[in-house]
Length: 370
Image 1 (cartoon, rainbow, N blue to C red):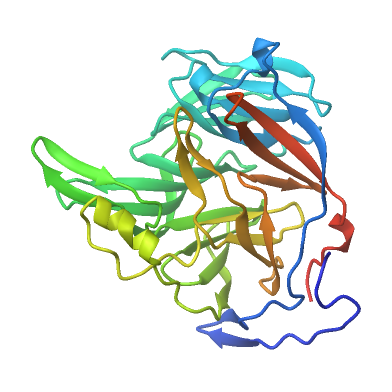
Image 2 (spheres, helix red, strand yellow):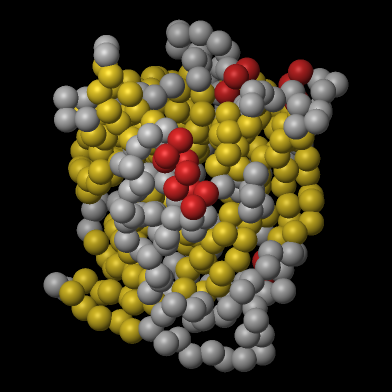
């Protein structure tokens, strides 16, 4: 099913305003085309206990290049595994260690589209850079923790950094652009990251429940990106140089904590926050559509760490900000590329992790705009 309004020509009920020369697109509460279901068919499964190249332990990141090769950040095996579009093993990048091209804890893996360079977040403050063939280039040691990042064509990096200030007992998300040495070129925005912190003997205790107010960012194309702070349902679309192009607002009710969610705070003896986040992640597909995840689905599974066990409930917006659909995605969906959806799955009984690719059979019917 693509839309509850199939065959109709619905009218958008929002409004467009101008504030200080910036276009503000105010969406109504209901999506233009109603509910949408992704029609998925499993197309590829990577993972096997019969070959060490295919045995993963704590997958933390996925990337897909222009040839549809799949790169898997296999964190606790200290490597990036590369497979072709048919799932055949190609090569391993990295190994355990602290030297050039070695990993301590590889998590996010991202690609720069034109050169194919591979960027890997290792531990909290390092980005390791490799050529597309896997040859090591350099390691960038940053002054702040890395929450998320996206390499750009001009060798700069759009980054969401985590700056800690133990003396003030607070953390801040810093949205910025880094140069090719990891130094901040431009700082675009800063927001409090409201994880729970308190002084204890010997330092500061930091605790996360997953309901922190946080900044989130996604690249729409090489020229612009979208970001928002989850205290409000407002998204900003900016050029990579930092010019605000337009702002997207959503008419949605303030999310309320359930009694079960409140109990998470009572268990760790912290007060329940005033605000629950409006959203928990932002990402985009290759058509530039924006996916805003509205539910918290990250759950700790023993031995594997954070992993989603429930579907992602998402709002889908057009590249220019119109609220098109409500929908849901499989747990751990991280990439939607040219009609295919990529995710990771865990079989707890077998203790096996897999990367799955699904064909989106109704991809061509999903609308791109009004």
